[in-house]
Amino acid sequence: MTPTAPYRPTTLSDDLRRLLDHAGGRALALGEIVEVLRGRGMDVVVVILVLPFCQPIPLPGLSTPFGIALMIFGFRIALRQRPWLPRWVLRREIAHDTLAKLVKGALAVARRMERVVHPRFRFFHRWPSFTVLNGLAIVSSAFILTLPLPIPFSNTIPAWSILLLALGMMEEDGVVIVAGYVAAGAAWTYLAMLWWLGEAGVHRLGLF
Image: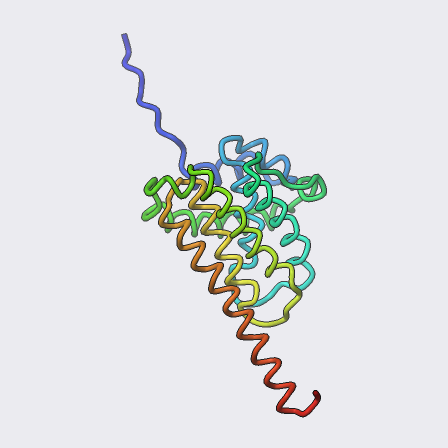
């Protein structure tokens, strides 16, 4: 009798490469991505949605609709319901060239994260109170993402918060989830600092 090979769960890198193979040079709708990656499909979609914002330059016109979609995603988690995104988001197609670039970026992040991300402090993912907190942290960061601020890092910090929270929940890593909380706090601190500097500038100019 041939011994059965032990089951090895696929890594995020494996799933991303499988997604690109499935595309076969054609555009894919986000809903199809969810279907292909049944195990972690919605999580991968969230990673794909936030990756374009994880760089310093804001992307005008995209952050608001994607931020609203991610707020809905976060509310579903906070209500301890199945993660869900609106149909208008899932119907959105990604051209193959764009998909390839996003997957390449996601692979670079995944390879780095897989060295350090592993299940630990799982109560940050499994306890109901932390599940609510995780969802609300995503909502708060996604709200900042919706603001059309043409200022460097205004998208970057909340996007990294959402990315860390998604990866932490995906791999049940409480340390990464906490890093997502810290990034969410940093995003609000940065927003408050911009508000304070703007208000101080207005008063200095004597406009009010």
